[in-house]
Image (cartoon, rainbow, N blue to C red; front, side, top):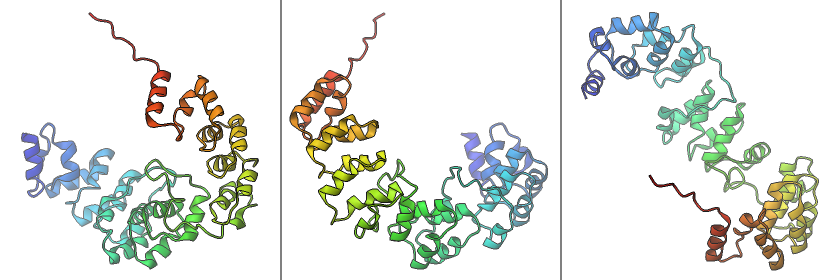
Length: 321
């Protein structure tokens, strides 16, 4: 309790070195407390890299010390400074950082807090820092000019976040993202499930060499059962999987795809609503396929539960003392 009280008190009152050296205080104070000027300057110039990194995010740091840390020899320290809310975009652009586009970064809270401010979104969408632009792209709604800018961003993760989070994302960009993104755990239906995703004029992709685009032809309202059958024999398993999930697939093709060399195609075929009852019974009786077949949508829920209870091994009995 004493440490918590000290940390809370020194968010308003400068913390002297004597308090800073108190056990349990130092590591947390350097990031969040208001420090006496001499202590803050000492840490900025002579602290360990981890301390300087924490100090770089301290919201109470004097501007000249922020500028000093912006030139720190440690890239991690400079990176933290470059994501501060209290520096200008010109200052941010002048901080040398190494940005790995493949690494996972969390959105910046202070940018998220400005999502309802159109002026701030316009300013930050033009930021030199990819993480700032990515955080802008997480907004649910954005001005049209901001959407246009972010939809052309060189960092394709900006476009991905726009597709996942923003209800105003444009159709052309959603199609681009669709070509390389299959969906995340948090938004598994996007970009394909986005309300602006194209639903018409997709038959033009029926012979597209890109399998991601080719399968979209089945989404066109003018597509036919014959096209589903054709795609069920496609050389690519992703296209066959899309056909195996289409309710227009014939019962005979659903049965045929049960022997597909790819597991996910077989799985989709085993759950197809037009699968003949005799075949479903055979799958239910086969130990290798029963667990999948027991999830078939045509089975009543009580039957599913009974089948799964029979399939799943009983819990081990814990021996008594």
